[in-house]
Image (cartoon, rainbow over all chains, first blue to last red; front, side, top):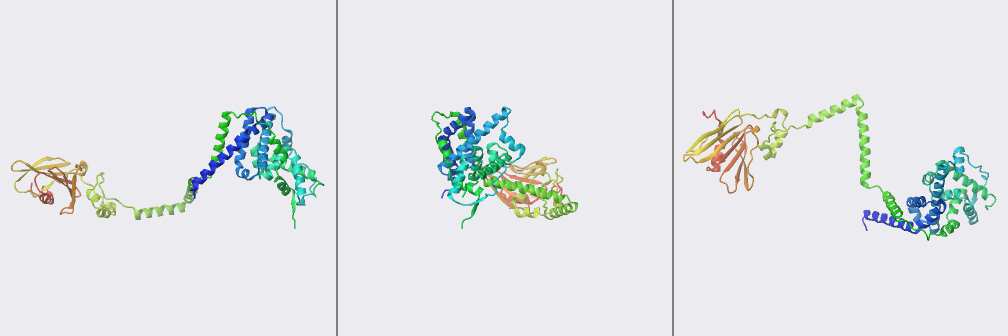
Length: 189
Length: 263
């Protein structure tokens, strides 16, 4: 049996090699996607960098996911960092992002008109309906649900990672769930 | 029986299946023209290493140091709290004084910084004297208050006083052929240490008649023999060039106040 300090060291080296491999394989693709929106190579590489850092933070979970989920994670992370950069630009240009401003200023939640359909028996059809609803949802909300319920990130971690206020994250989660309820009304079996 | 699930639970289950629409969108991104700049590549790889290294678990050494620091702070706060009360402070101070009274030891030695040879040569004696009290501390004469010299002089030897001052007395002894037989020295503790060449030296310890610890020092290839001792007040050195060790011991045992000898 290897000494424990050696095992720890090996694990670390393996992790470094693992993350570097992802970066080498996916870095260009992430950069291309970010640069297509941001049109600034320096900032786009910064976004790639930020994405890799989040990957490291959730490395153990990432290793356990299948390929499609891993790609979803990287892509969703990157898109949220791109949004963060866009928000910065809008703020610099003297404009506020209406959604953020609205949520933070009013603290209002969307009215949940479908509280009466809160529980259902599990069925693959119901799961598929929810999956489709999330998939068709605006990324701003769909991604929040992904990070919260699939990655198991806490609201404050989502906020810290993507440069949002905790109030905004709470609001988006609440709003996404309300949208889901509204979307699913009458569709669930 | 199948339980009902709420929306959150359904969302968790639904998200276990990846969003293939997004996956396909991502896979369709054309990155063929992208070249990662070397400096960006270096920077990101360096940051990857830093980030992962930074995630290493805290070492046991750091944990121990933190525990000790917390313990130290806690003890300091406790001590300050305890000492803030007059009565408690008095109890602690009294206990400390009692402890000090019970366990303090006073070393018997030269108050002027000298070393008593007998203390170093005999541990039992040193231990005994360690436990003595303040009253046992003896101040050695800083000047020679009483000149002492051997009362025994072998036949055919002539005594020739050489030096006699406040800190040292030297007497030489010659044969009738005016050959130097031996030299007697008496000196104070404050007159400095007596040094002997210890290269190839043979040192033999023994006790004189008055209980003083003495040492013979003889260097190989040299004719002279040194006999060194102290009587608790002065240091004596007898250096022989002609006489035997037995005679030297007899001479050393006969040292007494010069005035008593009627000289």
